[in-house]
Length: 492
Image (tube, rainbow, N blue to C red; front, side, top):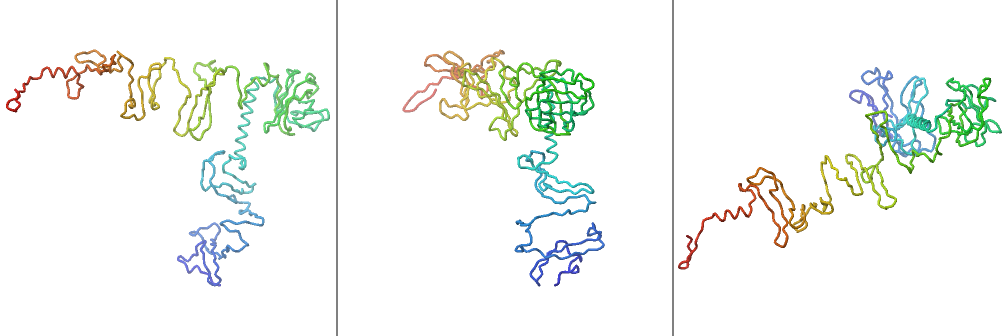
């Protein structure tokens, strides 16, 4: 069976991936180019060869179609590199995520899921897709970030608890069940039936603590008293135990390397991880009430007043209250403060809407500024038919379009009553240097009609003329006589 030769091409090199339809068997073949030495390019290779491979036919059941197919057997991907080489192996390409829990794309044809082979070390699988659904896989970076958040929350919670119930003892110890008494840096939980690792076992009656913690600090437990609480929890998970101290033994005996606390169970969850560090805190119960007396971070209701005062110790500091919501548009408010009178059904809301470049505050009730000023207003936009008034009296009505009909002008000035000026423009009257009303409307009593008055200049063609000006022109005009004679009229 004959195939094309290198001499059939110019230059005499068969291109990599060249397809040849062989008329002898009506099958297609593709060319795999080999450059020697390994790693050479077309410019540097000392030898160029290759081989023809038959193109799989769509009907051939032995092969999987690139365009999509179903396998009935197992798929195993061999390592494509030597142990001495670094590089990518299996890759699934797609749009990678810009950040964790972010649907914003980063690279459109990125390495969404890939295997990386390390030279002389363990290989790794990487994932760079979005992580915002419970079914998404996660990576180490995401877990570490969430772990840091939890650790910070625990740290802040410890500070808050210390502010409410200061600790008399704290340290880190390792849980054990190996010996009859804990050694240095160890603690042991026990029920009447024997040792246990369960923080949540309600039958726990004793806790034994070494007098030396994991950092080598010595504890005398001299300030610990009956009625105080022992708390043990691990940083790496949510497991914990809380117990009430009934009695103490061994703290005042220098020959004892551990102290035994007889306790009663208060609450607990999960297991102590043997060999892992657990935090210890011994403290007095909060005074002034139980946890119902405190506001929950997750949401709660206060029955007393809240004052935020940061002025102590500083003459230049701001006190702030921040509300943060999340909205994909301005249809609904992102932050809302509600005001309520329990003797009224009318709720008041101060809302904030913000999305993209549109942001504004909203009120659903009237606002009374109490005779105070409104400063630095760039625009006042009113609803059609809205007005500016005095008390309940309308003075200036604004409409979006208006018309030629009476009582439907775009801008309408209301008449205040009889014998009153409806509006006035200040200026200098003709022949005066004082500022006064020099253009105004006046509402007359009776049925004689109202009037608009003007006392300014009447010297230029475009100046407003008044009755007085017109009458003066008429009185100084020449007198003409019209006579009729013989059917004709004569002016003299």
